[in-house]
Length: 466
Image (cartoon, rainbow, N blue to C red; front, side, top):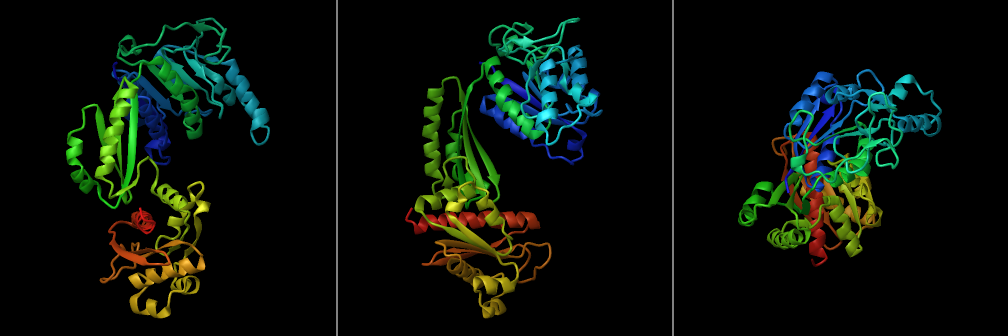
């Protein structure tokens, strides 16, 4: 079984100048990885036909799959289709099902009826050599160029435009052979490319087409390996220290199994990936190695699946039928935001007090005036009293409190920017830890947030006897 390689090309001047963040290529890469297609390159180019042609020429030399997003809109700078026509030596023709779909959207779906302009009609034009992929979420269809496991609507010179969607029976079509292997595919430029896929740049439209059409067709078109992943989440240990701790395990891994370190704020994911042709064999092997890895990192492991730290905290609290509340100063409600972003968090989350000012700490969390005067807001006694106040006022089993100096100003020689106190507790005991983060304001807030959640997770496990 030969490796299937892919290139992802995102098109748009807005991507190059940083006006729009490219999330499309990340999503596409993740989906391709899940089915065993190796992404060799991700590149962004502007709305220039010559750049599109150059990118197609270069990527087709060693990639079986090229996926393009963007440039399919109704304006003059949307030039992906003309570029594809030139690349494939084809011409634009009207695709009647797409025109009917676009017309229906304008007349019945959009918030108010809108006139169907000529530029909107042109979105139903497609190169006469492509398979048309219906876009259920928008006006610009996807386009598939190359071998297809289904019938491929195609227009010959002088013939009518394709009258049906890809995969429909009784359509004007060119029959394709059975599944294509790596060796039997060739690109328009003579390389080892196989298919070129053009998708709209609007993220939710692109995602829909990827999941509904592209991924299933790729699975049918190529002989792909089985790819399995196992992921666990650690917290409380840095990436380098973690790598040192499990170096012996990593060095003994078979060549077809890879270990990836995926660090984020205050945590590190470890992902084992295995690739092969026999699913049962690689699953059994991966399960055994994953069990060994879990045993090695048990001290720091938060979850043995690919979930977020807030999700792990909520699952733990649910399993123990306990509740939590937050008393935030320097994090300004960020902990509450992450917790409530998880569906079902209302079962365990009682509420939050964002006590940025000292008066709020006193009035809402019962922090004593003398504590603030003697030790200051950023201190162990203050966060300890914040936890006590949250436990009492919000009637909760557990509480977290944060207070610190996030920057860029506000630091002193005794308490420089990045000084943070975090406390967590219940009605039996409260523990507090000091941290020193020396980064910018945004990163200091994120680090404080995730360290607080990690601290809560470990505290709850200790208190609940795990």
